[in-house]
Structures are given as structure tokens and as C-alpha cells.
View 1: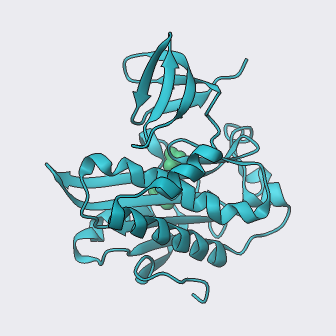
View 2: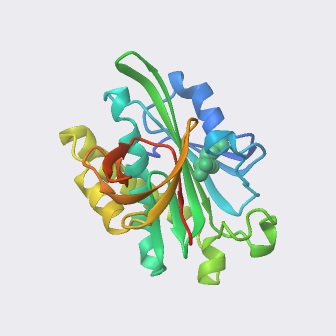
Length: 253
Ligand code: BTN
């Protein structure tokens, strides 16, 4: 589109009216598709979130897309691209002058409600990544009444917060423009400082208490910061620890 200024991200776009899941599709075509291919759907019939949850993706109301990447980086560095993606989305949304925050490592919140989720999936062997699929879901023009009772208090959309419809094509291009610029910097110099700065300065978690859920336990800790390797620094019972990923929810009371 006229708004896209990238070298390779989104130069090959596969656009579907309706598909099960753009992440799922991107994985099936990954081996024969070029680096930077973007799969976009108007509607997903089986959109997926993290931890096997479903992702509501009604027709024409959101940005449901997946970026296929084939980076020559270590599998252990892949999680950095999730935070880099969150920072790209944040940068594209900040012009709306809303109370927008990044909830490490993969959510964007407006007024403490989720507007965007990111699901990164990887195919790798030993020390080599075959491909990565970064799925981005943004609630753009969803009405409040379209969120079920379970989501009403937790989720929001740009339309709900701004009051009018948003141009999805333009926003999609801006996200891809931002993403590529941060991504090229990362590939070239292994430098994610810009993405980190955005994630640190606009964090929903830093200085707050969070509830951390792992398959083993469940505890409350204070978030101190985000480390240079993109892990979350927490204080747990006086001990400083780091989280690579996991379920972190804001602790209220
Ligand atoms: C989460 O917050 O749990 C992640 C949500 C990711 C949703 C996006 S929408 C496009 C892509 N395709 C999917 O099935 N999921 C991701």
C-alpha cells in the first residue's frame, strides 16, 4: 500500500477474507515463502492466543496478521523479537495520545485493558532457527457490545477508546514500517536498545506488584525493570530474579 515503506517486511502479503488462523497458515507455508512474508486475514475462525486460549477475531474489525521471519539468530534470542514487536505496535499507536502501556512481554494495554496481543511461534533445531512466526492481533474497530461478558472488563479496542473508526491499512503499514526499522537494527548490530527503551519507558509493570503463574507455583512479586536481554527483573521475597516469559498479571489490592 501507499503507506508501506519497508525493504522486505510485508513486500509479499497474503491476504485472506477468512482463515482459521494467520499464525497457523504462516507456519504451513513457511519453508517455501520469502523472509518477511505477511499473512493478513479479515476474519479468523480459530484465532489463537497464548497458552492455547482463543483469540476473538471478527470480520473487518481488527488487524489479524502474522509476520514470517527467517533470522540468523540463536533460538534463545527469539523472545527478544516479541518485545521488539510490542514496541513497534506501541510506536504506531502513540500518535492517538491515549494512556497506552506495554505489558511485558507481549501485550499492549489502553487504560489497563488489552488492545493487542502478540504470539510468537518458532521452528528451530539445536542452534538454528528455521523460521519464526510473529502473530499480532489488534482490536481496532470492535464495539463494546461485541466483547462477551468474559472480555468486557479486560479487553478494549481503538474505536472504543478513540470514539471513531480507524484506518486499518494505514495502521498495519505503520506497524510494519516500525517493525522493520527496529528489526534491521537488531539483525545488524544485535542492538535492541531502542525497543527496550520504548518498553521500559511505557511499561505497565515496572514498579508494580504482579502475580506470577508458572506450572509449578503462583506468587506475588515486585517488578524492578526489564534487563538488557529482555527478561523481566523481579524482587521475590527480597531476592532479585529474572523471568524469561510466563504469565504475569497485575496484582490489584
Ligand atoms: C495473546 O495475547 O494471547 C496473543 C494473541 C495473538 C493473536 C494473533 S491474531 C493473528 C495471529 N493469528 C493467531 O491465531 N493468533 C495471532
